[in-house]
Length: 126
Image 1 (cartoon, one colour):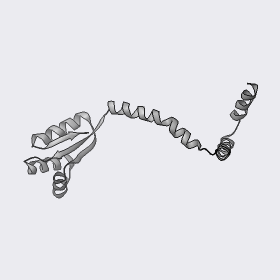
Image 2 (cartoon, rainbow, N blue to C red):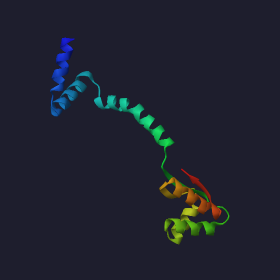
Image 3 (cartoon, one colour):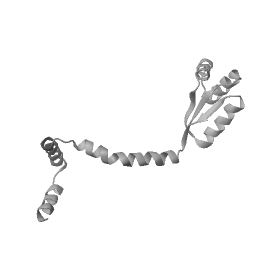
Image 4 (cartoon, rainbow, N blue to C red):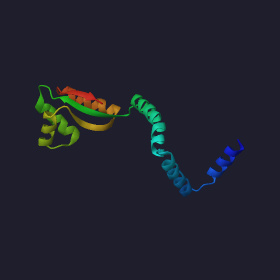
């Protein structure tokens, strides 16, 4: 145990450059990669964080799923929401499903959804 304690003390006194050199030497000696070990260790933590982020979604994307029967009214509403020109708004509506507005707060996303649905569009929030 005394040998291990001495080894820990020696490693603690290394500079960053010396530690990097040591890591390279160990990788060559044992045929392993330090980066792979770090990625594996960080993997589960990232997965858990993604699950928590999905539960607490604060930004939404308003997606036009379909224009419905009143395509001209939907084009007008898309132009009002996005500020696009007539041709760009028409292309967006005809190319549905497409995002109309991205990274918006939940209340604004709900408001935009209601506006588009009022003119006959089918809308999704993602």
